[in-house]
Length: 58
Image (cartoon, rainbow, N blue to C red; front, side, top):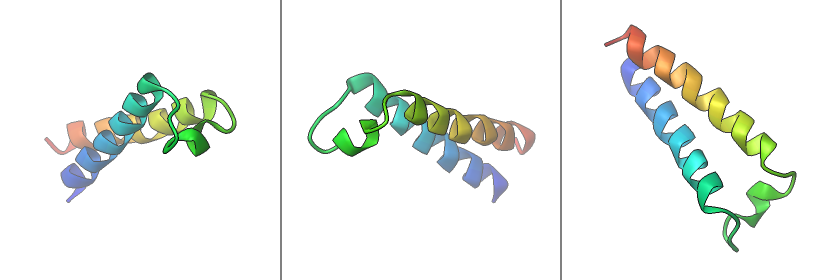
């Protein structure tokens, strides 16, 4: 279960990074309301624990 949670966190964090890389569009404009940094911090906050959970339960 922890491994699955780690994979889900990694996928969500990766999706945020892809959205950040693609940039602003009509559908994602609300994400960039406060700039890029909150999105980067949120992606890191999801990726790092996801990677830790995944690697611990390999």
